Image: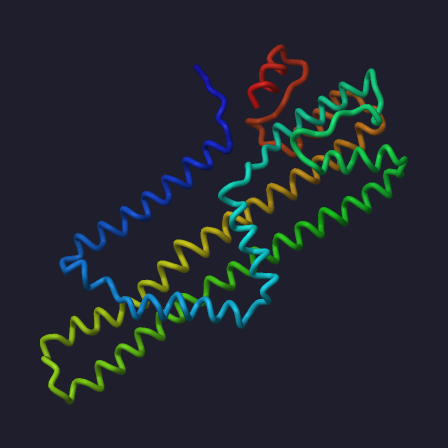
Amino acid sequence: MFVKRNPDVMRAISASVGIILGFLLGVLIVLYSGVSPDIYFNLLGLVLVVGGTISAILLSFSPREILRVFKVVLRIFFRSQISTRKIAFEVLRIARDLESSSFDKLKPSREHPFIDDCCTLIRDAYSDEDIGRILGQRIQSIYNQESQDTSLIRSMAKYPPAFGMIGTVVGLIALMASIGGNIDMSSIGTYMAVALTTTLYGLALSNFIFKPIADNMEMGSSRSLRARQMILESMILVKHRASLLVIQDTLNSFLPITENIDIMSTHAKEANDAA
């Protein structure tokens, strides 16, 4: 029996599996690398990489930018994923309601606040050109802000590997300086391994934390942009009381083929309830 997949549940499962696999990969590397697991723990190197990254971020960006991006990152893990299919059904619901009602009596949208923005301008008798100009600029402004936040996270991703290399160089300098002393030559390999752990920390922090978050933000921004564009174009058709088939085809042009909607289907209502 086919069960409709919930995007939020699938996203949570995907994130959980990714975290678990990453953790298991790290454990396997430590356990089967042929050396004592203690060699991978370097408190000074960890403090250098994390502290250096934080200091570089504070020097590079304003507190307001850092706080805003921090809030955006938190929303990645706690927000509901945008479902363009649900939004499409919501637009069709509004179009159906308008067959026997008016914009003044419409209920607030349950799926996306941008639908309410469109309804507000339509109720205020704005022309198509004004609606397209005002909301089009708003769409672009939101996308630019989201792109800027993504770029900021990508910029942060370059700091941990850099400080990891600094820690490695510092460790190697200390090692070279001690070779002429009473150091046991058989221990040089161990000291070099400890020095290299800072590079490991930097690469792990960059590739397991910052870059995946940036990729997630970029994909979310693209979904958000597409959803708003779909709402704007379809709501202008709703304003002119276009036929449901025209609105449906416009909505489907924004949806993946596998998620296309069909108001003529006897299963349309079931799909709407299950979406």
